[in-house]
Length: 156
Image (tube, rainbow, N blue to C red; front, side, top):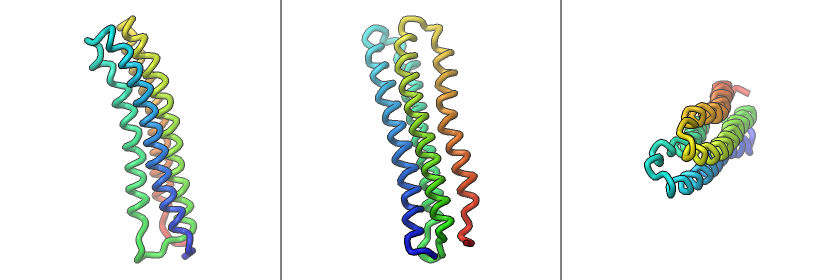
């Protein structure tokens, strides 16, 4: 067991939660500003326009899941290899950066589409489809991270 191996595991858990939360916050901010701008002219559309904010918040849940899985693998009683620590770091960074990019995409798309939705309600279906594709970016990171996390067995 390496003395500094747990540091990498903790860094992976922190990176996963931090970067996905930053992406979710940015997505919420950008989409929220668009909703606030649209709500002054078309208040009846606000409930449907909240979809980008909800989808941005879901991105942070991916980081929470991975952080909990990484933290579950950290135990002072069991040996923790350098391989597992670096694997957990990679797992956390994968989810974190994928969540950051997904939140950024959701924020930009949400802001633009909510504003255009206020002028043309037929934009709603297109907005939802684009938001789904932006959300899938975060899911890709979560899937890869879960696959990486299953390889951590502390045998090295």
